[in-house]
Image (tube, rainbow, N blue to C red; front, side, top):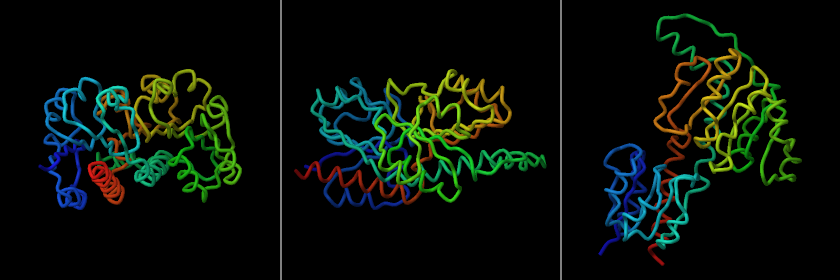
Length: 308
């Protein structure tokens, strides 16, 4: 009897059928997300019963959801972030949990750089103006020579350092476990959160969400910042106090923000009202090459687990 695998990401196998073919050719029965979007808790509970394995998106996988799938033996989160998974619940139910920790790196780092450049030159807002019939020319600024603060010097943070080297930036970095060897080799200044708040022109977040990192960028942080600060988050939702950011951007016309992730998704909050805030719908991994690599890695993880 074939093992049954549920994929709950909204686009598994759509960019390329190779991940699906890999699973099917290995003898697995694969069922795709019928809703084509992030699942609610009730939808997850309704779908998951009867499956042996799960390739998951960003939906919440708590005790309530995981308990609704008594046959589930294996869970692979498509991507690096694991804050949606209740590990205690998974352990108590003997469910093995893995992720795909590396395939997203280039996609997120390149999107971050794109968001920075768009904010500096008003690319997104200029597009909106042109298509609405307004011929406005925003006076932007250059990236070259700016001070960039990176919060979280993991794989994506380090890739962003590499991508921005041609722009002659001063780079400050905060990490709970700093890498002084890497920092020295790449002219990165290991800094405190206060130093980043006070000195940086651009602050980019590259950390996982946790209780300790919730609202890391808050009113206190923003009160120390330059009035033209740019805040960038293509990492995880919940790292920024969105209400505090709204007031900061509203009060400082020269400030800006680029957000790809939000505390509640789909996002429909007050930041949508601001012309100095650019928003995208969590597309960090939505590059063709990235999606294929992530899905192939997840499919191979499934095969490896059930082949033991």
